[in-house]
Length: 338
Image (cartoon, rainbow, N blue to C red; front, side, top):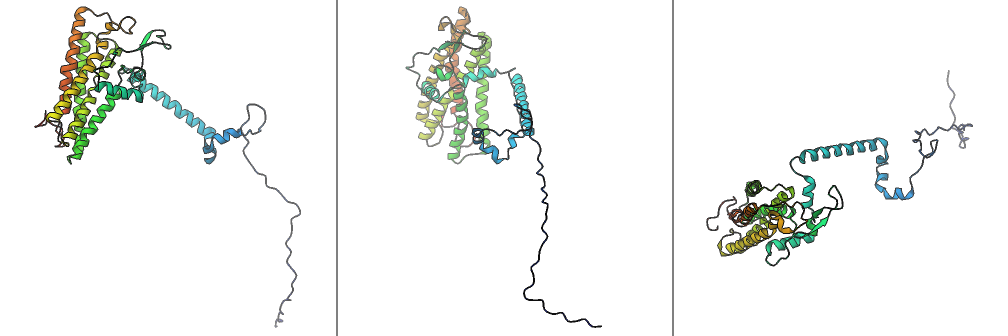
């Protein structure tokens, strides 16, 4: 049985027709309902104002992540945890150091720092030396007299300049050693330790003075600690000038001795005038906050301590800090200098 031959399809075949659906079904767009509004009933979604959208351009980039309720809960929990941790640290740290009292000594400005540095280096014609007072308008001591912060009174002691001068001293000594090609990694730590020993010894002297002079006021103790760090300003000037003249070969020679003698006398005169109103507060007149009645014998001992501390103790510590051989790369006593 043979199949017949198929002929070629006609040239003009009819077009194909696809069935067209008569009933169009729409798939619903399923979305979660918005949170209920507090101002009305229902699920009417309220869009934020246009000004608020313009003020938060970064939220739109993250797809509204910060507006997510879960993110807000996590952010609030993190803030609460940081607040609890900060309160815990402050409570335990305040057992040894009054943080609120220390904030007074760091309340400085650029103008104060400039005038204070000039006062430490050129104290000869400065008048007056007494600190300014004002009436307290807040807290438990409302209406009582209190000293103005350093930014408002150049005679007020601060801890910003002593701290920055301490750091500058450590960096300057290592810089001079590096310029002479004698820098060593341990030099930074040794210089820091050397300056720290001086501070610890001076704090020990102040602690003994507090014990024998019967100084119980907390503000007076912080004032003594603040004044003890101003000697680093004179030490930095001595090292910088001496190294510049001697081409980095230490602070010895006539130039080094001359600069050291001037900065020492300026620092001693500055301390003698400033500490008079701390150790002898009766000279401030009535109305001085924290004034103690000082007996004649106690007053005499405080005067002697003021002289010994301003001249003898400061000379020893300033000589120690400046009598370093920066050419060897290791802190040590200079053989040709002091």
